[in-house]
Image (cartoon, rainbow, N blue to C red; front, side, top):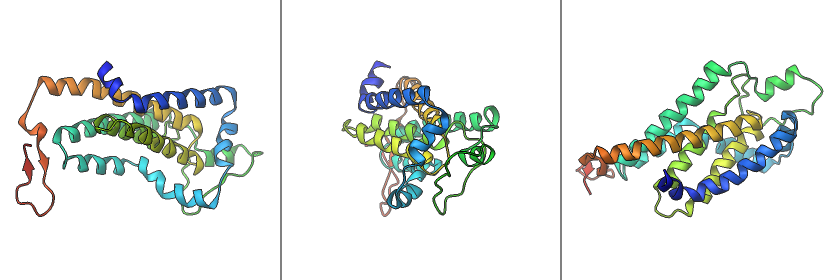
Amino acid sequence: MLHLLRQTRTFLIPYALVLLGVGAILLTTPKHTAFFLVNGHFTPFFDQFFRPFTNVGDGLFYVLITLALLFVRFRWALLSFACFAVTSLAAQLGKQLIFTGHPRPFRYFQENPGFPPLHVVEGVVMGTLKSFPSGHSTSAFSVFLVLTYLVRQKSWGLAFVLLAAFTAYSRVYLAQHFVEDVYAGSVLGTVLTLAVLAWLEPWLDRHPRPWYTWRLRRPGVKQVMSNR
């Protein structure tokens, strides 16, 4: 576990600082105040930027990363898939079974008038329920933590945590979630990913298989697998 934490410290240290800062805001301000700190400050540029960028937290993006890892090493793709499966399942269990009645901002402010109007970006479909936790935030923090662990140049961890944070920020900016939703999603994705890696990596080491080092060949190459 200590090795895992060292390998991902360039992601985890800045994330811990962000976690403390946002946590302090959540403890000292009402949920609507924290929400409008993000959603209430908008520009046309960020409207156009965050509308597609928020899809980085979509499960499809995680699947594409996992498929891409098949061209690098099957073992890495397996790690990515396991983290994706566990974190996605946990987020959906929270949404579908435990916190089903949690309204999203669009519905919350419809039912509680008297607040400033939401900033709604054209073309974004507004959700109404199952706000907690944010699945996009769970997925983003998980996939970028996995990439931090896998890449050789660990300084990429800072860029990866920024991408994950921007994804979470986009969910509030686009009025899809409250800050507490993305906060919980980030914790869920990070903690479960660390847990999966801490368990699965030693398990794979104890059960070596030749195909762990295989990879898919690029299109046009006759042999589809390599043991290098």
